[in-house]
Image 1 (cartoon, one colour):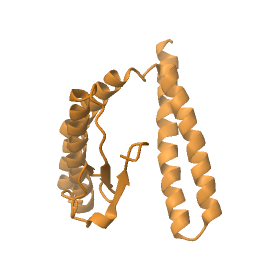
Image 2 (cartoon, rainbow, N blue to C red):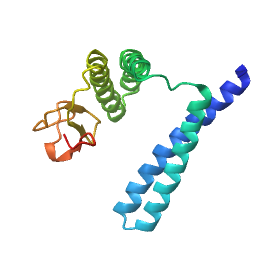
Image 3 (cartoon, rainbow, N blue to C red):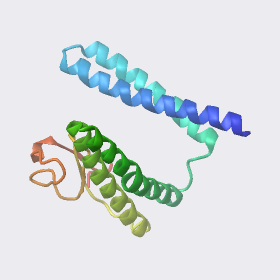
Image 4 (spheres, rainbow, N blue to C red):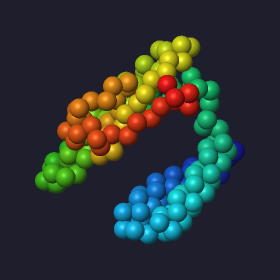
Length: 170
């Protein structure tokens, strides 16, 4: 694939990924406002956009083996936490934007947790250990195995966490 096509496919992927996330947020809002059919429409189109994004990833050949995907994800999380969010925090603080500064700071902390989880997964890949994850629905913090009483990043109570288990119910 030549460079121009690669860049076009990458831009298409980025657009599809953004659209899918945006539409999922719109679906949540429609549900909260009592519009279940509009929420369904947003979810259906978000799913379709995800299909487009996955097709683009396949064209870009960015989906490797599980080991390669873990290593890439680990490196990405470390870069985002160590560089991007650190810079974003500085920009927000210089502008005096406390809400954005808090968002960037908490996101940086959560990205560091993501990197740690990827590292542990790489170290235990052959074991394929089973765990239950708990994700804070406010800031995105991920707890591995134990539901905390409150989020260590943003402080919300455990009721604000969503549980994720493997298909075996373990």
